[in-house]
Length: 214
Image (cartoon, rainbow, N blue to C red; front, side, top):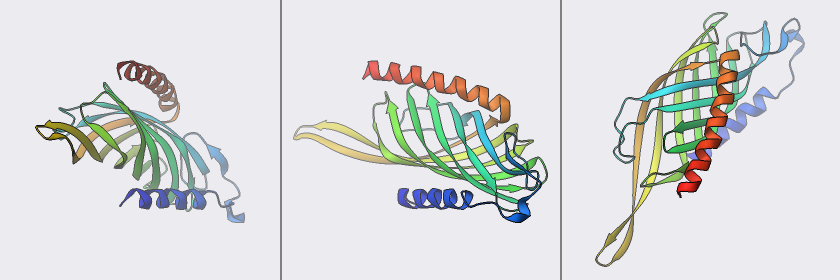
């Protein structure tokens, strides 16, 4: 799916989640911080932070990079088993900071256990890499949520890069693409919210460091 397709999916899910609750929604909390299925919650916040470990070598970026990641957003239960929504997504490594949007679909397996799919698009990047990261980047993940407090995730990122090389006849631009697989864990609810604040502070510091080095 291209960048336009990801944005279209994200916009569609936002429209769906913004529709008014029906009369049958009576009895549930309007908004929950810790997510549960309908009718206990009509909608809920997403406050997540986690660590992701590479499962494949990045030849373009020159090695394996562990990422800290955070998501802040909102989801709505559109049925007793299904929820949709979206988040602002950020990722932080030792030499780059990236941010984007993710659409979210959650399937409730019980009151506190769920599986989730989250395709997204990277729309901002600041780095100190040898190769230039070309926007937009694409990312997609799958997560098993336990109690909406801990999640186990796998995700893939499709990235494109540009590199300038000097030849005898001048400078030419080469372009590369690569898919990197990562696995990791997330914390949600109150722990995720606190971790997200630390993540944001770290991201601001990292941006300042990368800006000074450029």
